[in-house]
Image 1 (cartoon, rainbow, N blue to C red):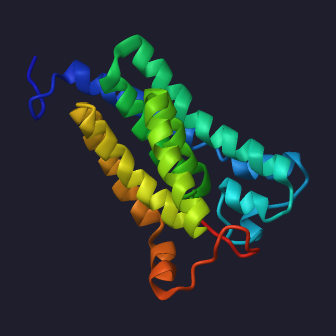
Image 2 (cartoon, rainbow, N blue to C red):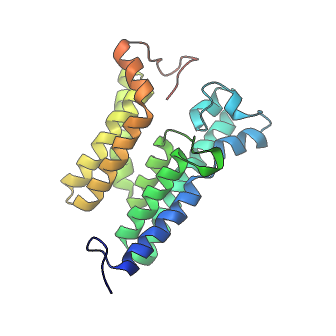
Length: 209
């Protein structure tokens, strides 16, 4: 069979399939669903209007925020584990990237979703606890010392592909680097606020990541 850009059509089809499945999983807006389950109203009308756990927390309902955080992470973990179990790391990367993009650009919400950090973390867990640990150590260190959640997330997202490269997993490092670049794009307002000294710190009522 003729190849497309050097990729066998069957392989390309399989990558597309797992990306699509990951996207569908990642596009489920658990923040909005949890807000409804807990009777918190329309999450789009609260705080920043973001669908992530941070905005759910602005309602003051910690169980709803915790549930959102867990589910947003799991929708990144489960596609990676499923694809990796049946077809290996290439399909796992396709599924994980799909889930990540699905959270950020869900077609259910006219492609206006979250910033992707929780799902990014879930994807890391799918590839191995050590990647999650690398992210968590950097995030906790910076969050505790500087109290900027957004800055901690940005630096931690850079540290993970570096860690993957250090461990010799070049292919995964490249995939994670692309996801990190997208995380920076979704946090560009936070970056502007950080540069101007206007970003809120962890614990403040206006904290936004």
